[in-house]
Image (cartoon, rainbow, N blue to C red; front, side, top):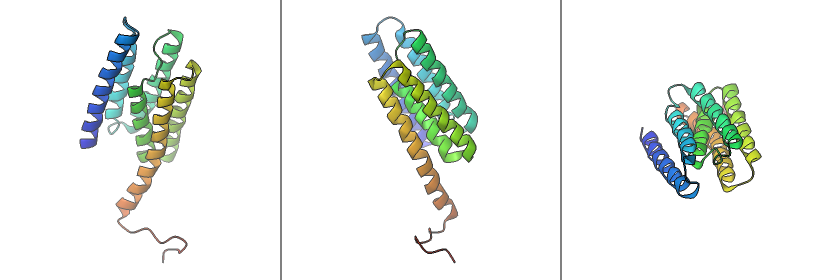
Length: 164
């Protein structure tokens, strides 16, 4: 619960900061697209516990459409840092909790969307999105491994010696 609250605060601050920076730099209504995408992505990331595979799949799909629309419409590059953080949360959470094939499908989708973002050109936004999704790809399996050890309650057997 506290993690979700903290994540929500980070999301709200990130969305507000990104909207402000786009208003100052791009002007006009360019900020609306990025803000709308970030709000949807952050909402999906906060709902990840309710519909695990569907929220993650929807997040990958929303990000893919957003990248395509931003590329076609000459809009600010997607995924924005906040949307990329939400995508990383969805990918990491999927790798931590879903069945292996579902988790791999979501992870592959996250990697594909991030690669698709590079079509727009190498920028700081793309680099940050790549690092965030990479963080989700690393954190998810690590948290899954630690959860397995905690759930069983038994200590891990020493390396090199089979358990008797």
